[in-house]
Length: 98
Image 1 (cartoon, rainbow, N blue to C red):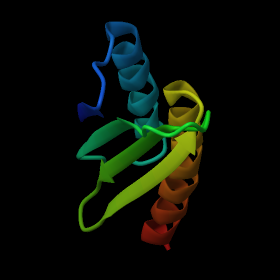
Image 2: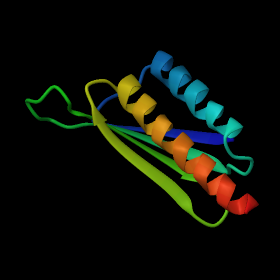
Image 3: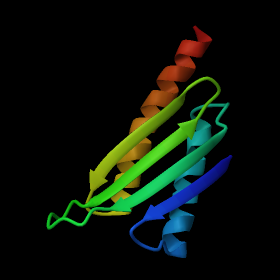
Image 4: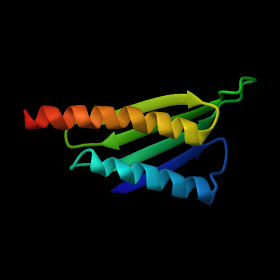
């Protein structure tokens, strides 16, 4: 699966990049026909601690699934996003089987 990562308002380090690729590749266990994934990491310039936006878009035949989370760290945001995506992928796969 092809994974593209884009960072807005900061430069991404290699450790975070490897973490994202590893976690997103685990989604292939939940759906057979994943075409690709796009991950957008954004930093809002606010005084709040939860200023990191993680947006994950999964490309499937037909429709795409997009999940957007706001958190303190990108790792936490990615984890929350992937949990939501797993539920949606399982639900969509069960619909296809029915």
